[in-house]
Length: 496
Image (tube, rainbow, N blue to C red; front, side, top):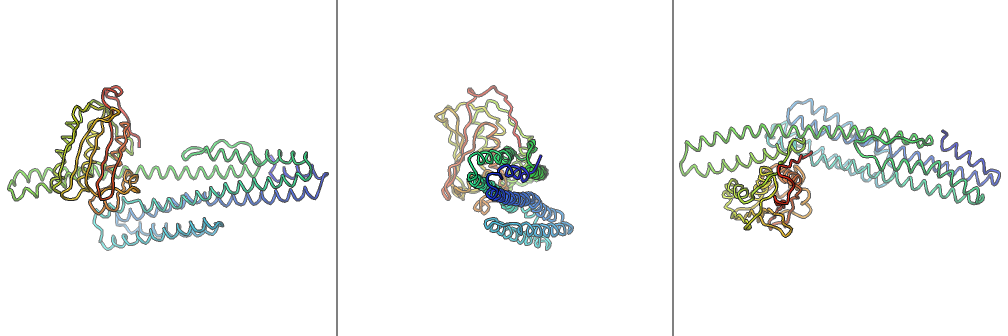
């Protein structure tokens, strides 16, 4: 199998009898463009291959900082400094390879974002060394991944720019090939047709085949079988295959890291629930021994906060189970009236603390629905708890259900709280995300809505929202009537 250059040389030799000069010009033009294409592909692919390692270094820096916060061992700070130095050195090396203005600008923005991230991290590490961080603050900092995720996303966007430049190079090569064809047309119709067919078979077809392979590839899958191709294309195929292996290794590493995070969250929340159970039992004994009217408000406050903390821990535990695939729903015949009434009665203490007007709005003759009663009760408890937390004193919260025109039963929680901005509506359904106003109003981990949405998706339902900032929110979902559902006791597994 010869190289592209040798094939083109042989082709041009066959038309030298017609016009040696024009054939030589055509050959030199094609050779120069091909070399430029090879150089551009090698540079872009080398840059792309280095990006996963940079993302890994960012994750290592974040992990080292978290490890120091959790253990206070100085070795983690030394590892972090080495990781930062390695990242900066590699960042400078990669930046020196960039030629296009948009890549240089974006790479500079990545560098600036990294400096801001490290400065912020240095600040809270300094506080940790001085003993200025509480355990709760430490846990919150180790769980907060939005900054490093945003930084990793910026690095990943550089890969998108590189892919765009690769495509531009491919189009440039095709334009150069067409220009070569135009020159060869001067030699003659027969010579031009011969050159067009040969160049198309030697260059364009392998590139298109390679492009189709790249388009059909996905993370976690092996690179498609490599077909026979000229030397340079074969080398390019090998380089892209090597790149796919590295990307798959990084993908697997990040998947394992995510699994470890889920296991850690589940373990911490489980132990947290055990401690709360002891506190609750002690409070019950204390309440029985101290029944004075003066102590009653304090007992109510303790009960409300124990319930709130228990709800947070339960949400974290269930979210961990969802992500590990160990949480499932079993549908059965459910009467919504008693379920909603019980939920409001159990959580009303949270509303009474803030003097909220609480109403239950149940339409008459509600049909039974097909659902997992415990899972749906958890969803309602999450929505009610959020409504109580983010509604100011003296506001109103309503829980209700009504039959829709399509026969499904809609369950809703409505409040007069702080509301949600349009640009934040999608983000609040992602795990561990909270709005800035929400952080100021109440404490939490931001997992309740993500957990509720996953549970409802297992029921074939969607959690929806109508809201306006400062005017309250209305969360709602619909369930299928039991008579129209598939056989009872149907079991649906939730996958992470």
